[in-house]
Image 1 (cartoon, rainbow, N blue to C red):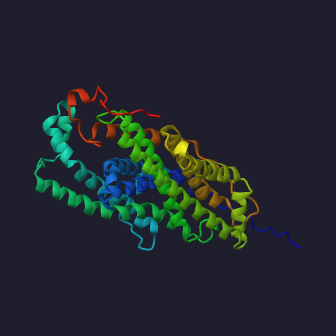
Image 2: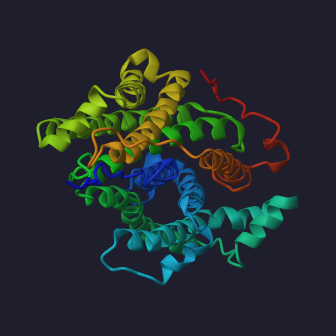
Image 3: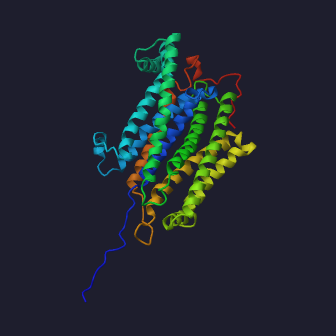
Length: 397
């Protein structure tokens, strides 16, 4: 009898690596920051109007870096532009290409209308580099009449209203892509877009809190955290608390259904609850990323401390990064035709790019908050950069 060789145990390598996971993280941060910025300008909650510019600046800065992770992950990154003229109407990724273009474009125009009055005022009252910069950014529109300001407000409302669904779609479509891959038990659920969106709100709120604390203390005209600003930050902390509750509830429901579904779903739940991903999921994503920040925002002593709140906000970022890595990479490591997990090792080149992109993001945010009128222009430019505002109790705890 002739020997017969059977081809079996075909490997299914991990195609979406850490670069894609971090891309999802950046888009989530941007979406969360934009939605929070819209609370004052679109939904009319007056106390949040003062953070609207900061939220949009963050949204634009994050979207400037996020697509670089996609381009860097391509085998031929110089051909990314072909996605613009090879539309596949049945592909969510094709629509994502245009969303990643339309959303930041809308956000930039939206931000310009929010800052136009400051640009015009700064072009008249400031001196030196900022005066030249602000004069250029007015694009010749220096009208400060009541009619011009009312027109700006109308455009802010329109563009903000358009920007909210765009922000949700830019991040929601990532969960939609994963949810439609039926072979991956961890991904194939209608909750996937909602889980991604709610974790985006958690991380976006966490980053916004950190940015507000740092920039208001060191980069605002007053260089001070006033009582009013601290009170607003504590209000945002309460929003983060409820985002954590909703995010944790969705995750809990998802894993209950996953655990008691078919064999593939049960194996996926076992991997995260008892297997090799247990530490990253239960320890980092759930423990450090959800439970600890929730406790810090719940206890009276810690929820009114900027130090503890900063720690909790930072931990939400770590937790959501872990969530992106767990779901994107872990979902592909579950075998489709073998009896062992698909191996994955991050490419050192990709890790280097992620680090360089993160440093670039920090630099962009610093320059934006340093030179743009995110918190308005100094009332007394000659001294505002050197002195604290007198009479304000601006102690950072």
